[in-house]
Image (cartoon, rainbow, N blue to C red; front, side, top):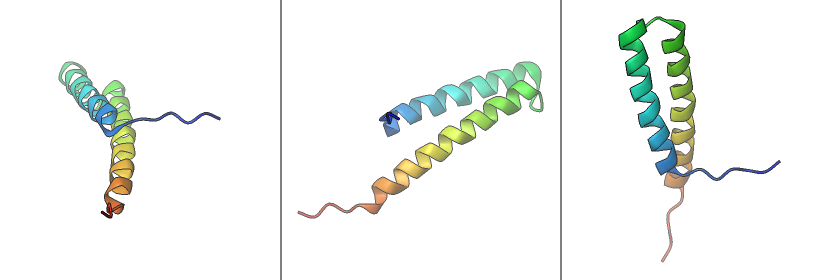
Length: 64
């Protein structure tokens, strides 16, 4: 199975997009509407990926 390389910038873009979509859905359909909840769950997954990658990068200290 091939691995897909994804950068923190890609994830930041996805986070911003999902946040805006969730806000739009929430304002039009309500905060407890299934579409709003689904978008929130998708955002949670992307945020978790971002946090995992960011934490791994923080673990390494370059040695000069």
